[in-house]
View 1 (cartoon, one colour):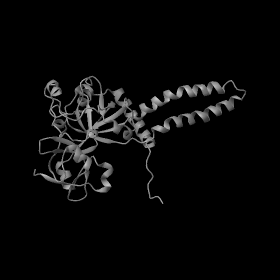
View 2 (tube, rainbow, N blue to C red; view 1 turned 120 degrees about the vertical axis):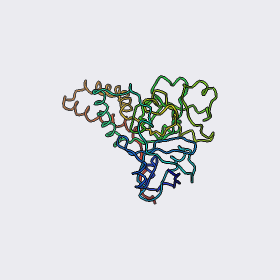
View 3 (cartoon, rainbow, N blue to C red; view 1 turned 45 degrees about the horizontal axis):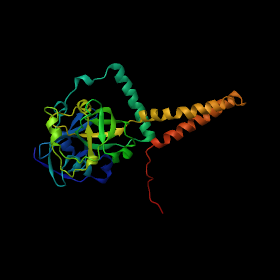
View 4 (cartoon, rainbow, N blue to C red; view 1 turned 180 degrees about the vertical axis):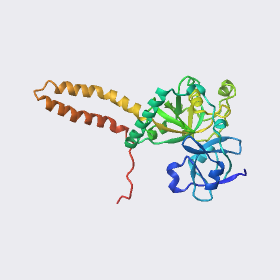
Length: 301
């Protein structure tokens, strides 16, 4: 089809700014349902192809937010081409990554737990453009993120995060990006990269905090094609493993509390009452730092 001019995002759509917003007629023509969401394939002037989630613009314009335009390296006023995506042409399928019945059931339960925890503690999502991993990161499911993004995601180095692309969501370990390295193509790394692995070069001043370096094992599991390792992915924290880590820190104070209360001359009912009253308080105080603080709405005098 002919190139389409893009327009700024509406204010009400900023909360889902990782989407491209299309008119109803273009959704029918160029969007495809993959999993539970609609996606379209954006082709840029340099031939780069990106699968992006679709929203309804409710007008005649194609709208893309500032962050997504930056991730795509698509300047204001630029034109793009849309194609209706097919899953097999956007992903490199990994036949060895399927889950068995027991594992699949357990992960559904884990997802429900995560949804419940997110509603209480919050789990902000950030959108990134993927890039090749560093040497030494080949053998693990890990990603490297700019250090400034860790507080925003509510994580620390070494925590688990979910990374999602085209309905595929996997768990990886998040480590810090090397700040001393500018985002420049290294001739040495290019000479030694895997056969057939390609990516488009980005401008030297591309914002590094929007880059996520994905290890080959994670990239393969997400289905990112080998002929262009750049893709748009979404990342959010995995709360359950953070809570398990905090519970480990609580074992000692709870044990000391019980040891201190049991020898006292109080009745058994009083002892149980004190333990049941104080233990949740200890747990609540320990888990409080995991909650993502929301700014209050409205105006101040």
